[in-house]
Amino acid sequence: MTRPRPLAAALAAGLLVLAACSGESTSTDAPTSTAGAPTTAAASSTDAPTTVPGTDAATTSPVTDAPTTTLPAGPVYPLTGLPVTDPTIAARPAMVVKIDNNKNARPQSGLNEADIVFEEIVEVQTRFAAVFHSQGSDPVGPIRSGRTQDVDLLGSLNRPLFVWSGGNPAVTDIIEASDLVELSALKSRVWNGGGFYRSSDRDAPHNEYAQTSMLWTLAPEGAGPPPQQFQYLSSGQAAVGSPSNGCSGEMDGLSVDWRYDPASGLYLRNSAGVPHNDTQSGQVSTNNVIVMEVTYRPSQVDSRSPEAQTIGSGTVMVFTGGVMIHGTWSRADRLSPITLTDDAGNPILLTPGRTFVELARSGTFSAV
Image 1 (cartoon, rainbow, N blue to C red):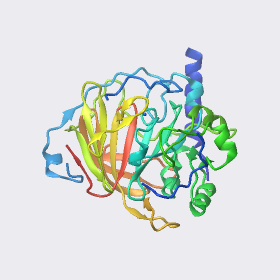
Image 2: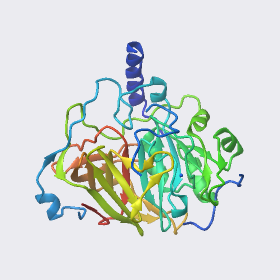
Image 3: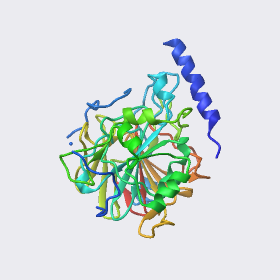
Image 4: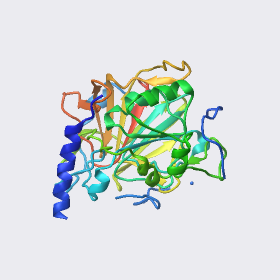
C-alpha cells in the first residue's frame, strides 16, 4: 500500500518554517506482575500541551453561531488543528492504544491526552481506540485486545503504532498482515521496551498499562506523521448549527452522555449515569463529539465480535462549540480520512482541539 507522502512532506516543510522562526471473561493479555471537573493539564502528560437523522427538532431549531476561536497562523498538529509547539513531536508517527472500557477498568489513564478517541462496540460493551500524537500519557491504559474492525478504522493514520494486549490467533494474523505497526504486549520486546506493567490496584485483565514515551521509541525507522483527519475552524471563525447542550445515547447497553460546558468550551462525559473520570485529569472531556452512524457486521474471523463498517457513508451529528450540525460522513477507502459534510453539502469544520468519535448503531443517539 502507498503511504500518504505528499501530506507528510507538506507538514515537514511547515515544521522547517517554524523551526527557522523559533466485561470479557477471557483474557488475551500478557502475564501478570505486580485513578470531578476537568483540569487544565494532566499531571503525567509527557508531551506538548435528539433523534439522529432529520428530526423535526434538528431541522426547526434556530441556527446559532458558536463562540469564536482565535489561533495564530502557522503549522498545526494534524490531529487537533492546534499550533505546533515542538517540530520533533509533530514529525513523529501517530500511536493508537486500545483502552479497556469495562466498568472494572474505569477510571482509565490517558483519555484526555489523546488527540482523537474512537469508541467502538465490542462484545456487550465498548472499547476505545485512543490516538496519540501531539501529546502522550505516562501511564496509559488499561490496555486490552484489538479487533478486526481496527484495521479499516485506523488505515488513514499513515501506518500508526498499534498498541494492544494481544489477541486470538485469527485476529492477530489480520492485524500483523495490515500496515498497522503492531506492538503487542505478548512480545517481550514490546513488554519491556514499552514500559508495560500490571497495576496492583485492580484485578486482571483490567490492570495492564504502558508508557507512551517508551512506546514511541519502538517506532520503526522512517515512520512519519499522520495526515490531517478533519477540517477545522480558522482563527475567529465560529461554528454554525442548531443550539444543543450535547447528546446522549446507548452503545449496546452502555449509556453515554456528553454535556456542553460553556465555561470551558468542552463536552463532559458521563457513562452509565455517572461522571466518567480519567485517573490523571478528572472528568473525560473533549472539544468535539462526532456521532457516526455505522453498520456493525460479524467479524469475518469471529462471529461473536461486531465489526464497524467505516468505509462508505452514513448519517452524522457533530457537536462543537455548543451547536449541533447534522450531515453525512463518507469515506472512499481505508486509507482515506473520514469526510464530514452538512445537509447542504458544505464541509463540517471542527473546533481545534481534541475529538471523540462515537461509532454508533443507527438511531441510538439523540441531541439534547
